[in-house]
Each structure stands twice: as C-alpha cells, then as structure tokens.
Image (tube, rainbow, N blue to C red; front, side, top):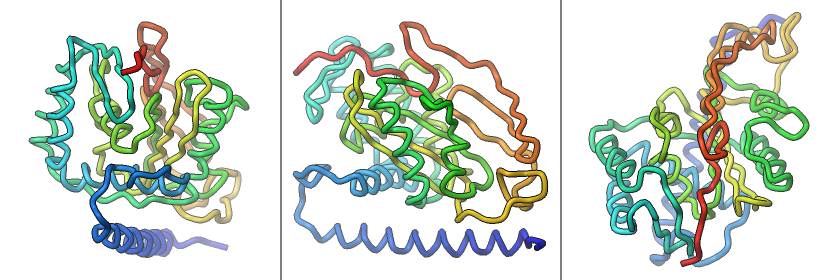
Length: 291
C-alpha cells in the first residue's frame, strides 16, 4: 500500500498538538498548587520525573532568560572549581569552575525562544530501557550492554522523523539540576549538550531515569524531530516507512553520524573521548564530597 508523505506529516502534527495541549493543561493546573520546592516535597514517580524534566526543558527553550536566576545562583556556590549543590547534598569538582556558567549566561541572554517539546511516552520507554541498562551495569555509554543503539531503541517503540539525538546526565536526581548540568556543559568546548537542548529541529523528547551502580543516578534524554506509532516498512527497509527513506541526520552526543535508513549504513565521525576517564556523551559525574 502506497503511503502519502503529506498525510503522515498531518498525522504527526495532529498527534503532537493533542499531546501538547494535554501537557499544557496539566502544567496550568499545577500553577494553582501551593508553592513548594522543585519536587513538590515528595519523591517523584518515573512518569512524574519525566514530566518534570520536560517542563524544565520547555521553560528554558520557550523562555531562555527564565533560567538566568538559576545560573546566577550557581555562581555563588563555587569555591574555586568546586561547586556545591545544596539541593543534592553534594559538592562537585568541575573543570572550568564559574567560567562555563558565565558562558551559559551570555548564551541564554542572547538566545531567542525555540519550540515547545512534546513528551512522548513511547520515546520515554526507550530512554528508560537505556537508563536501566546503564544503571544496573554501571556503564556510561550510548551503546547498550546488548549492543543496542539509540536508533534501535527508539525504533522498537515507534518511528522517528527528521533528526534524533541522545544526551546522558549522571549524578543528579533533581530535574532542574539535570537540565542545568547539560545546559552549562562544563568541560566541553563545543557545548554540544547545550546546543542540543536548545535545537529547534527537535520537537519531541523522551526521558528515562534510574539509580546508577557507580555514578549515583543516570538520566537519559532522547530527542526527535517527530515520533509516531509503528507502521509498515518499505521494500528492502526494515527500519522505517517510505516517507522516512531519505538521508537523515542523527547524533549520539559527540558522535556525529549520518545514516541511510534504507541501506542501514552509518558513517561515524570521530568519537571524542575526554581526558580523565570521561566517556563519549555526557561526562561521568565528577568526584563528589558530602556537603
């Protein structure tokens, strides 16, 4: 059966708008709640944590300047290159100290708003799978213990559109702190995580969170230009329907890769392993000291 690319685009748009409206309504309802800390004073469920991270992402994406007070507060918590995070009860050894935070402030002051991200439950399933795998095995990688990749994990639950990307954050359990860690992007000259968080080509997000064997916590963020239900594959292509069979760009942080969805052939760029035992993607949690 021949597929109509325009129809698929319309279905994606309609689904995205419906989910966005539900999430906006839920967020508005929370505005009437009594003031509380970021977690509402309680332990968050898996779904609540994902929703909280998505809300923080959308806050900084749709109003970049709204995160300026949080960054300014971070600057007061440095002693040399040691950052104290009272809400986590830890102190972290950073690479750049206040410099990375100051750089982020300049970036956000000049940045224009970008589109709202829709939290996609099926993308979150893929992110949760990887978070569980990383946490239970003590790994710090975009590749699963079974050899799975971001592409394969996402395609197990649906079909992605446009571009996809994956970010990993370690050591923190508060949604805002997770976003701040990726946004500041300490020790990464290209600020690749920051750029991904604020990239307007991404329209959908999935979030997974789990305790980590060595790094305390791990949060997996998967991004896509769109995401939908599984459909019929095209001839000779087990990955995606005909409308998606063109050269697309996806990025596992620090590993630029172009993939041809029909041939399944990928062309990896140079993976950049950072000094000090850090891995591709989001860095391992720096040495910590109890506050």
